[in-house]
Length: 120
Image (cartoon, rainbow, N blue to C red):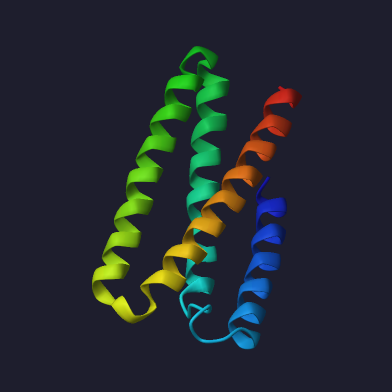
């Protein structure tokens, strides 16, 4: 899972850098590469927690999944709010980029979990 997440994140990082280079300033956010790194780290951590929970006690998997999802959603909202308070001039571009990466990584995480859990 780590190799595929690294490959996926590098691809998204290259796309984010290219997006920032070729798009108008109001559609680009200089924080895009940081967003990709943030989601890479959070995805790896949550994936490991979920796989460990499933191997120790499959009954607790759903509870752990729901808990980590709720916690991450709350943390992500806090990141968006803090960024908006710090840099209002680029807030819309940041929020849109953050949400796009959130959904991309969410889909990636679900697919990765399905593959890993089917193998076990």
